[in-house]
Image (tube, rainbow, N blue to C red; front, top):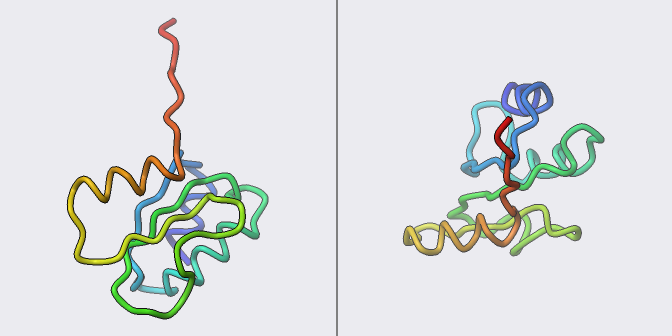
Length: 91
């Protein structure tokens, strides 16, 4: 689960991923993210073509499912549904 371990180190604001990862399925990755204390607050958008796995989002709203094919507008809307950018004040 290389991508999951990387997210634990980097702690990104959100992750955009496909359903077919080299070492784990997209739905399994979502489960890993949501059950881990270090990654449970990371917003995830899963790009999916198959009908298995989560329907639209997980219970806490940290994950959205984006069904392929999709438009750039749909991608932005899905990201916005799970992630709100924080402003970084200049020092």
